[in-house]
Image 1: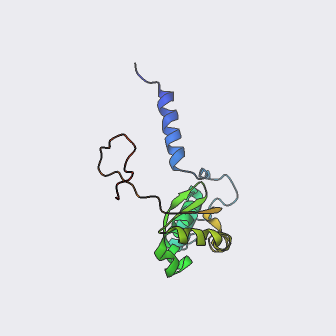
Image 2: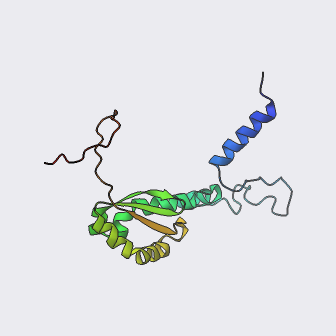
Image 3: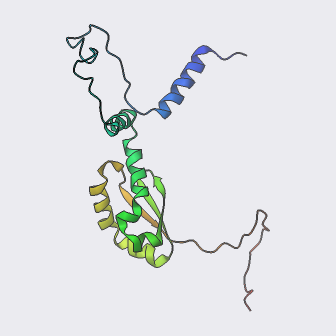
Amino acid sequence: MKPEHSDFASSAYLRAKSVWKGVPYRRRRLGSDSTEGEGRAPFGTGRDPRMLGDILAKAATDMGWSADLEQARVITEWAEFVGQPTSDHTEVVGVRDGVLLLQCDSTAWATELRRLRSEILTRLLREFPDSEIRDLRFLAPGAPSWRHGPRTVQGRGPRDTYG
C-alpha cells in the first residue's frame, strides 16, 4: 500500500518544525509597500556590510536557538564562573527542563554547594539571563557498584566477605 502524499507532507512538516524553532520568514513582494527600492539599489541604504556576530545573533534569535546557546555558554564557562577550587570538584552533567545538573566528587562538596545554591543561582541568573536555567541540582557520588562486566548473577550480592 502506497502512503498518501498528505502523510508524507505532514511528517516532513513535523520533522522540520522540530528542528527549526523560529518564526517563519516571509519575503516581501515587490511593490507591496512604500519601501520598494530600499536595500535593492546598488548604493542604496541597507546595503552596508554588517558584522558577522550581528548576523549570527539575529539568525540564532530567528531560529529560536538563543536559550540553547546561552546554556552551552554556561556549561563551557562553568570553571570561570565558580572558580578553580569549586570547578575541580564539580562537573556539569547537562541541563534538563531548566535545571542545571552538577556531579560533585564527594558528598561534602555536594552538601556545601547545596547550601550555597541560592547565591550561585542568583549570580547565574544575573550573568546569563537568557539561559532559562531556573534551578541547580548538585548530585552526590553514588555508592560503589559491585557489577563488573556485562553479565551478572541474580542474588543478594556480597555480604560478610571482609572477614
